[in-house]
Image (cartoon, rainbow, N blue to C red; front, side, top):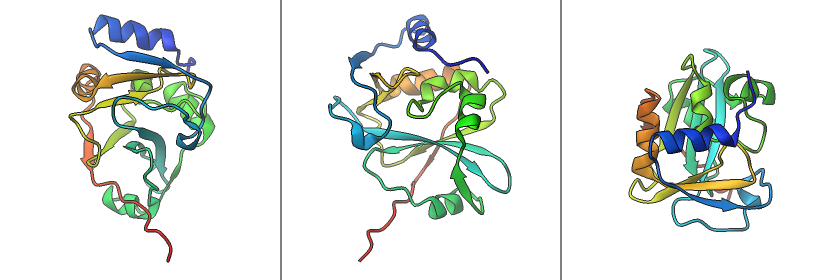
Length: 168
């Protein structure tokens, strides 16, 4: 798999006439490291894999949500989920740790990944994603993100992504 680049993201967005605002920033590897705000939904992107069926799930959920992985596995009809390895992330999407983004889904040419979008994300807001590099964030309207997915023939699965309950 070739490394995913920001150039290819900008080319597709231009070709498909998807407007965006770009925020340049220091490299961020986790939501906790973000020291800027966007005009829209703050999300985190995770590539998960099923232990038994070997299926891959790209999960988009609110940035501050502490994901309950066991409960999510049940929601998706899987017995157990884990994070995909760095090698799998690169093999499937051409991405490195810290730059996980659905804007790399054009690399999933064999449609091995199921996209799961948390129902908690406000679809009337804008949403921000890295353009295959973690030193910038592109803010686009959610409906334009849906148009991006449609161009790729990706039908996302909307689900209530469970959060870990705080320990008492």
